[in-house]
Image: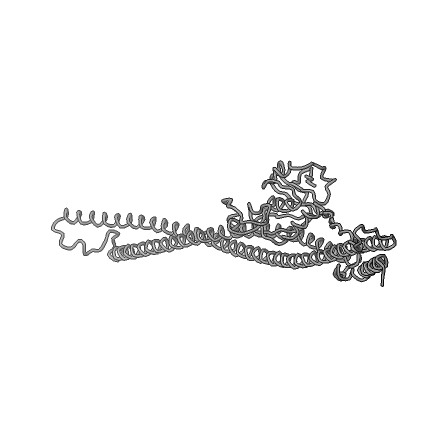
Length: 453
């Protein structure tokens, strides 16, 4: 038969055995199996891949900017060439009308000259016949038949005077017709000279139109080629941006796995420490004599309750802001779009933004993207880049760090972007574009960056 002390010792030994068993084997039940733990080299390789793709996106952005600028130049050149071709068409039509009128004038003058020549020839023939008849009668005043029937010498003299007058009148008429023919011939000559000039103008205008049409065709072909090149760069950029998003997602996944593993390891260490503490307390209790019971009841053992686990908050505000902005790479630009919670429908501007449909499309504008990015870090800024420029501490542009805001225009009121470091930034640039990573543009940039975190 066991004494009470022996029974107490057996009970304590049993409790100790259970505690030790829990300390050695129970941890497998308290914590889950270890999650994947990517190596530092895997995470570094993923980041290097994402950085390389981000740099390539920046290069393609620069190339696209140049290609689009060249495309605009060629488009303007096409418009100029089209106007010149239109001018050449009008000039040709004018020259053709002048040539047609000159031809009609020349034809009319020739008809008049021919008619005048025929009148001269008819009169000359009649005069020649009159002169021949007079000559055959031995007189220069006409045919002898004109004297038949004269009743007296006075009558005969009157008839002779009449024939002489008729002869003189015919000669005068002949002279007038000759002068008219000369005038008509001169008009014919002038009309044909004008026709030659008009034909020359028409030929020159026709050549000018052909040259203008050819120049326009060349300009259009160059513009179409540049547009195709810009489209190709734009497609390549979109492809690399997709690869960048995938690479960033992979890095985020590896980083999340590492964080999950670190949390698991910390939980496991705390559990092991707690089990060791309990085992030590149980061992100490087993080594000490059990306290006497005034009532004669057996002693009992109650282990100390476990303390709650305190998890310290972690994370960096700058990286949180950048990660929130990067999560929307490729999101369309909408003027007036975006708030602290994410992209929103844009608003009307009565101009360019309306032409792109920003007022009915969900997206960000430049300051809306900054609002959303920094709200994740607990910093709330207004929806206007000019106000955002004055919302934090100013630092010289050459001292800008990752997470600072960069501004353009008077008072920073034209544009804002988030600096990523190494000369790169993320921005929502303009209507018709989307959230993108691009090299920092120093034209028109403000001399100070704004630091919020």
